[in-house]
Image 1 (cartoon, protein in one colour):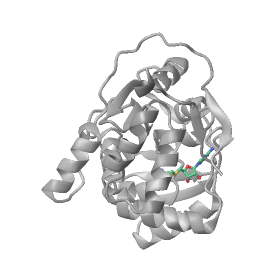
Image 2: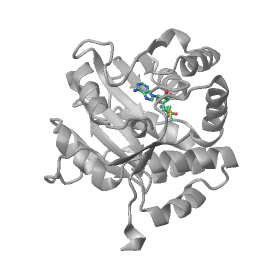
Image 3: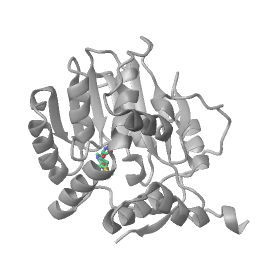
Image 4: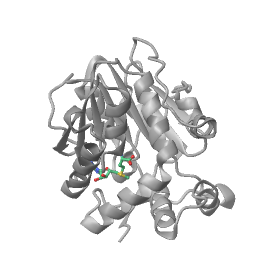
Length: 274
Ligand SMILES: C[S@@+](CC[C@H](N)C(=O)[O-])C[C@H]1O[C@@H](n2cnc3c(N)ncnc32)[C@H](O)[C@@H]1O
């Protein structure tokens, strides 16, 4: 079954290390990740209380936190990240977006969040799960610091079979510059396969959560707020709105059947990308 062969994950470094790397990531994410970021923000705004507190885990350079603050003006946002250099740029981004007052930025580790149980109305994370050798502590921590009936949205890439990775990068990374394409390939090789997502979901057994797929590229573990969809949608051209809908499955979590899965640890190469 060569076509459907999956090699073990090749991990990325947990936190981006140099200030240069961080600035490059920020420039590229502003240029290329607009559809993904806005699609995720719509999912979150649609599934959390309008006046609540939101924690974003792995906030990076704060672009999602800034969008949440701009389009959800009643929200109080906290962004946490392991990388001090990321947080420096995140501070600049929230301040240049004039939403600095609504966003607190905190240095911290997703595996041991520096917050008490039930501290937030919503806990969200985007494109950071693949940085962790074992993502279960991230999921456990997200549900721990969310209120018992709070919203949780954890979205990340899905790794395709080896033979499809170059095709995936060519199609979904169409127009990316070579550096961004390389980053995308590295992230895909570090991401969980769909079977690994299902195993993770089964290991966590979060009450009231669903696992869903968005298009071919992403998956989400979600527990939307019980208060229902706020109906907030981001402005933009018709083409941009349709692209978002297509890419992130209309920005909604769609339930997937929960099946018993093997519960062993994730396989990954000991190697980390240099
Ligand atoms: C690919 S970036 C994603 C940033 C942002 N969420 C986005 O979607 O553009 C992943 C971020 O996760 C952070 N990160 C990795 N491991 C972490 C950990 N254990 N705790 C907190 N943040 C972590 C990295 O420093 C980086 O900023």
